[in-house]
Length: 353
Image (cartoon, rainbow, N blue to C red):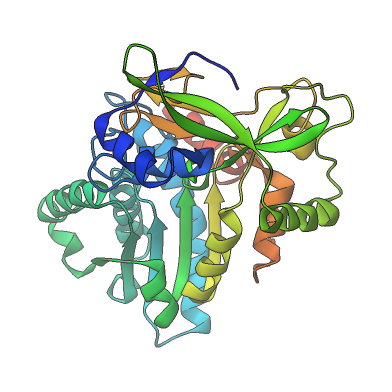
């Protein structure tokens, strides 16, 4: 990925100076998104929804949540039969604006009145700014509906859930695509890891520049193991120098943590993904990394650090391998439209007509 050098805000200059002036892109992305004071998510300044920086399916209306709720009802009824005395948890990791959480509560209150006393909503949010907004929305939602007085909810972390695992359904809705990614670039026939460097110009201003470094041995070993298991060729045979892509190295640890957080139940991942032959193809020479702000997409991901969303698509095969290697059993995968049709989208359209 190329582009003009970007101005570096003072808070980020301090991070770079403490790290020697150059860091992997994954570290830059982690700072830009999750710094608790200045990060786009960490500070809570990023807005999700029609009037925000970007939209998700859940923020476009209640239909998506209602259809997802149909699947949750099926799973929760089965879990209730298999665990007749246990609390059943709906765990949402990275709840965003908590729109999905509120809509799911409405659906479950309506569809599972006999189980409401056994259900709880568990929100896992690592960014304090986002958690504040979630608490406010859920409090308002709770106060506006008397029937929700028995539907409990709480915030916790995956680490805490690992020590006290729950029974239920864990939801990761448009979560993994915002995990910090490794950026890889083909140079002189060899893949290298892209870095972000802080450099001072002749005018005295400090700017962010792209750079590269050798792929660390531990990362290379993890990549080689996944590539061998999935039979993916990286880089693709026809790729030319300058070809770049992403590698989602953090997902494996997340799947391991999520597995330990559930004593029994299901994991539902909903995200942007491509098959490996499309993701790691020679024509896709810039990868999938994008920035979003005020409903506009940009490939200039270094500008306005901490003020825009950064996201990269997932590779289906590597994601499935990371999940199954950490204890999960694949029940199935499909495109979102196919899933929604199977859950009754066509019937909802027909009822509108």
